[in-house]
Image 1 (tube, helix red, strand yellow):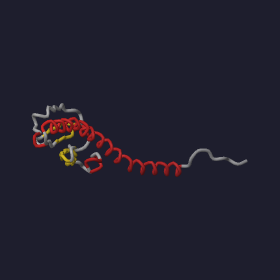
Image 2 (image 1 turned 45 degrees about the vertical axis):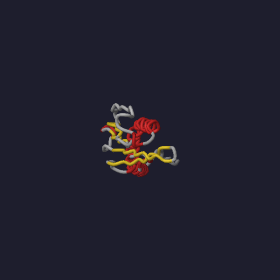
Image 3 (image 1 turned 90 degrees about the vertical axis):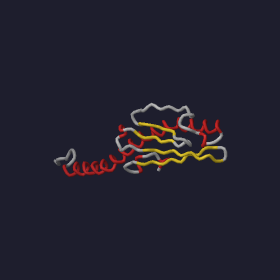
Image 4 (image 1 turned 180 degrees about the horizontal axis):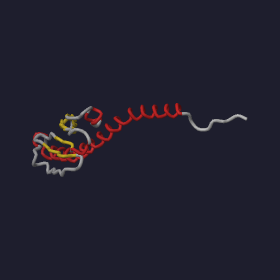
Length: 139
């Protein structure tokens, strides 16, 4: 009679553990960048209200030059992931992320440009650890 081996050998188990270790080493940093990016995107989503205020004020007053900090009527309350959203004269919006994002504080600057009856927004970001931590629209 032959003895049949049941189960896995030690070397097979070690190979599986090594493969899992390699996959985890690649996936964990990518997942961390993803979570920081989504928390930073929340601050840009909050800034959408400021963009609407600037657009309405520019339409009402006739130009972006007439947009001031006080005449937009925009007010902001800080959240876990967004520390501040400010509107400067001329319509430039500055949004700063909070400390709860898991990464460094990122400053988003949204600059409006009026052209052909519409307002186009140019987004830039500073302060991030790497570009994978900010939303694609601001890279």
